[in-house]
Length: 168
Image 1 (tube, rainbow, N blue to C red):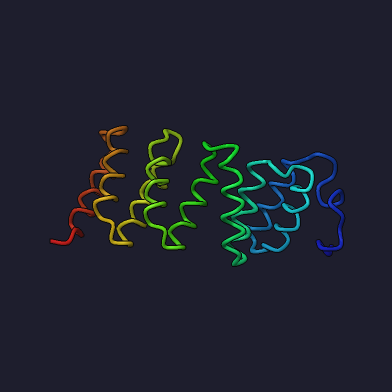
Image 2: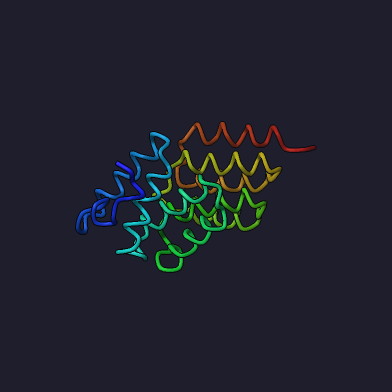
């Protein structure tokens, strides 16, 4: 079906947000980002402040090359739901892309300190900092997580790798 020709109710019947979110994610997984955008835009008409929809809209905007719209969606979510990690992570990546390293680092500190933030994400943040030449910040981020998981050998290993790359 031609997604652009469908009405919002045909795309997402009734009030089924879960279906919209799953369908949009399925389209994104298969590279059909424009179709995902149509679904999320339709769902946002009925639920303009829904954090999951807004975060997905942000991700879609960034993928489609509209970074300012992506940032606006992420910031919209964080105004009403400051603890919504997907929007925070999206904004961190946007900060990094935009060269706003200080803002990214501050947001990373917030996200990394949350118990629900996956360790893989903390390591990804640290790697992004290393790639930006922010070695001390990367080590600080990893050590903060190590304080929560002192027996994690992978974290210790990552800290050593960061220290190895420190300029003399």
